[in-house]
Image 1 (spheres, rainbow, N blue to C red):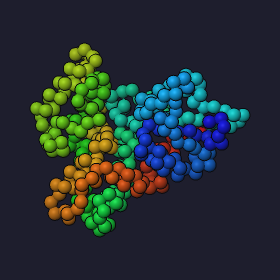
Image 2: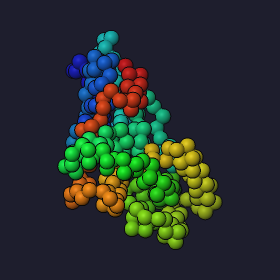
Image 3: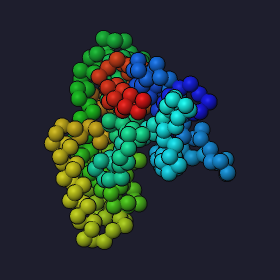
Length: 295
């Protein structure tokens, strides 16, 4: 930092999508561009003694705590100010707890970077690129899909609540944001009430708290999730890794849709949407505001 002319040093958690996503988000700010910025993977930063590096959200937040304790979140070289920014996925921290309160820790608006990409990307162009179809067909397909982001959120509302509860209870089990729903028929179908009851019992049984405390946490989580859905914001709790499978499933089950090649489409969708992000779109305002405030 001290040897550089750049003002903002951005630490990100993900390998594949985070750097180009944040480069698009902050690079479109003339103020940030003029100040200069660098984007670093947390895995590029090694421990001084062991020379080991770690990845992921926990590593980013650990490095934040390290720098905070050493009063190095902001450093000066003469009158020149340089700052660190730690970018992490919001996940459901505002529901289950654990969110850091610092201007140096910047959370995504959606659950994670991948969800941001699917939320703000141009679906017509992205579907066309990922599926190898012409624009007219891609337009028709997007129209048939409708609001697929909210549809997945509604379909998996119970699963999302259970994932939030598992995190809040620190429950180690098969329920969590790293997994697709196991309580919906054939993954994306209707809710299976019996499976949902069994999953809830498992989450509570594997939690770290006693019955009384677990009951209080369960009620709080349920109220927060319900509130977010009632405000029409349930889709902001959907993990980005869930979207590709759902999109392919929806398209494959459409009646009247033109035949198209879906084999392997899941792995191309995220990067296809990434390539369609508009750096002048309204979504960048959240990031401009957060990063510019650090200058």
